Amino acid sequence: MTQLSNSISRSQVEQLVRQALSQQLGGVAPAPQTAPNPLVVNISARHIHLSQEHLEILFGKGAQLEVQKDLYQEGYFAATQTVAVVGPRRRMIPNVRVLGPCRGDTQVELAFTDTISLGLDVPIRISGDLKGTPGCVLMGPKGVVELEFGVIRAARHVHMSPADCAYYGCSNGDNLHLRIESAGCTTVLEDVVVRENPEVKLEVHIDTDEGNAVDLDHATSVKLYVPEGCKCKHS
Image (tube, rainbow, N blue to C red):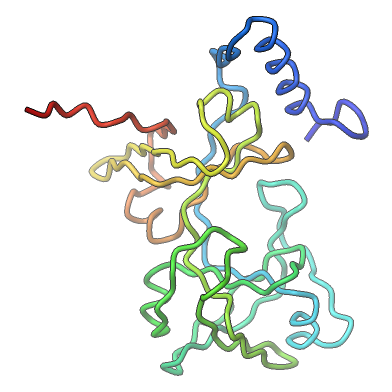
């Protein structure tokens, strides 16, 4: 992301300008009429975030993640390393990609069909919300890690800057709707959680099951919007 200075980003400057206008006008600054960034929808396939401790157990002392491919969000990447995920049924999903950089806690993100295959009852959570989640066994070339917790089905979500939030009229933690148009598969996905951060690009993440169901690869249109309140008339 282009920085205007060493300490403040363009989106932060835009947010400060809107706040100043709001104060001068005595109300809420109007939302911008044109989208500040293109809407990108990507499938987030099954993957693992490892702690440095678990990385070294699985791949050897002093191991570091090696970049295979940079991801859409700056600073994040798919690593060359993969691990096997083993569930209570002794069924295994091999070659699950590790994403970098390392995190404080190891987290395994799976699609619903993956969890059925492994025999796990996995909740839908925002990344990092791991309390009360099930564990699994991770197998690497140098060792094995038995996780007590950390397996989730990632809630569909959208990464947004403050400028994006202003355009769409939402705030961090809100739920938006995502309409995906594709031949025979047009669908509206609800409960797309807003994750606001001044340093991110606008990007929606859905899992593999969802991406296949809407035939995302052949989608002709995507639209993100704030859901309207109920307009039902009660007698």
